[in-house]
Image 1: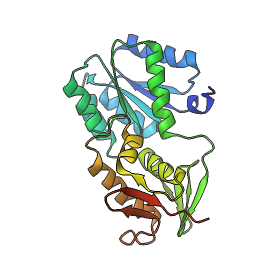
Image 2: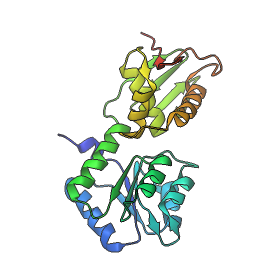
Image 3: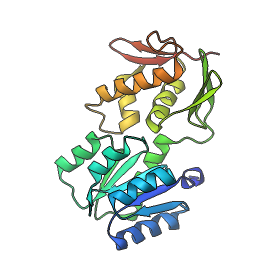
Image 4: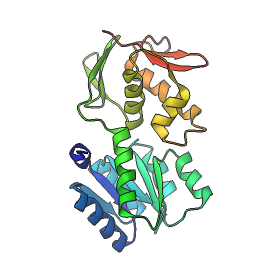
Length: 233
């Protein structure tokens, strides 16, 4: 499989163990990733997020000036970039804490290089698509390649999850997509408990694509079933 499109994405590794940073960087570089930045603390990571704007973050749970969960909450104030937790702790409570905050995956140390690569590619494939099309809605255009909505002469950026949500609906070409299917597309194999988060994404997306978000004509709720996207032919 050709991974070159995904390998161009910028990855941020956050861990205070130099040996692990070097090992993960080597694994990724050897597989073809050429745009890797690193941070050794939560403070450094926030700065890297703001300055480097990575496409994917791999966060250690235990950091010298805090923890990965708190760091992710800080990041979510200004970024919806996909996140994978990488940690020595594999307790169920920690896993649920990470996934409950909206993390895209969780990998426990020690790990096999191929497992790490498989998880990274899986998250990148969910969040970023090559040669994605345009779709025309009522009053706006969604450009999946640029992850933005063009409305009234303005470009409005889409977050990674908004991009996935709209693309999942667009692929169904006006048919109803269930809530469970949308949650699985956004949060992977464990979508349970995310319906409130899904509703919040719907509200934000309507603000971006609808002329009147309180009276949606493009992103339609089908009560008791799910959602559909009315695409102009």
